[in-house]
Length: 79
Image (cartoon, rainbow, N blue to C red; front, side, top):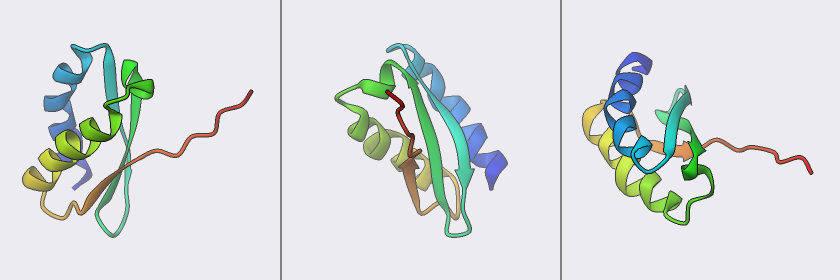
């Protein structure tokens, strides 16, 4: 399943990169929950939730059997 997820993300990436952002696969767990990392302009974008749920998650749910959800990687910011 991991390989198929990465393959689908590679198809999506050019569209995200057009807006100055990027998406990176982090992991998939035993429940089919995919974790991704958003980079560049997407990391702080006001449309991040929509991009994640209406774009990335919708496409992965449709194209990769076994995917149940897509989550954003939890990151710690150090100040």
